[in-house]
Length: 388
Image (tube, rainbow, N blue to C red; front, side):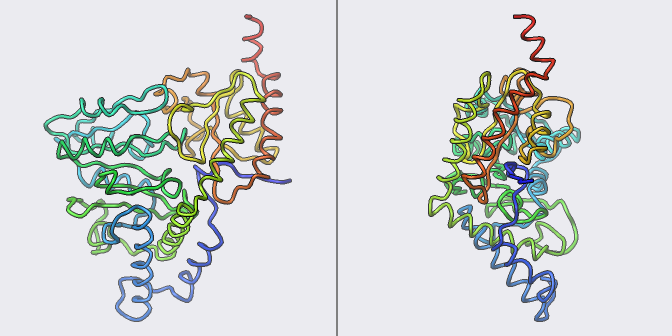
């Protein structure tokens, strides 16, 4: 059976060039980057070389890049690294659970947390952030691109607010890195998180941009790795892979490759909406990353659609992979004012660099017919028809 993967916001395949770059560091170049002999120094040089393309992708300096075990650790390090009991944090209602649950834990420890809302487009109003400021506000943490809808937040406005108030600003850019231009200086953020497996590097590696002068307390204690900001022997193969993926992403942005991805996304979205009644895009009126569309199909269950399409060879999702199996509908869609039944009827299509127009055509050959079949079988649809 042919299989097409359109769930790249959950995880991306490692690009061949990235795999080629990292493979030697599993075998011939296996040294510990903290060792002073030739093997170790070879690994150390590779780690430092990888820091440069990651910094270029974000517009920062290599010394401001801290390698982590992924996006969740980067988010946690940003939050726990600057805030604690007695401080006040401002975040939003649509954050990834890596941020939401970190803030909840700090709240349990005596930190105050304000969660600003979003409008029906999924956008945070900068004025709500400004109004939430308090004398003890230490950190604003609002994501750059939402993992479920792809909606882009006005992070530059939040950066200005934070700078004016003299507080730190962190943005989770896990779903934005490699898809849009990022410049930490233009944004004005002090901390920014990325994850390797969202940009065609392997799972288990990420990075946190930490602006010079930011007082960051480590979460992991041990050696003086990463300039004493993140202890633990470096994952050299993963770091090398992240550096190569960042280099490829930067080149793609410079050559306008994301325009092709955006065109494929728009073709997928527009063709589905033209062919399927009672369907629409969540967050359509807001700016979005070029690879993501989140569509609701009234009168069906989103998980049923995901399963039915998977049986036909198409992989999509109902939202965040870390929330799969959750009974409650998406907290992101509910925060946008989407009805619970529509939130449950929503699915996400997310493209990667490897996807082709032929694969989009394959998806389009399946989705409308599968939706129609599920609606005929759905008791939800029966109830709607019988009541009309």
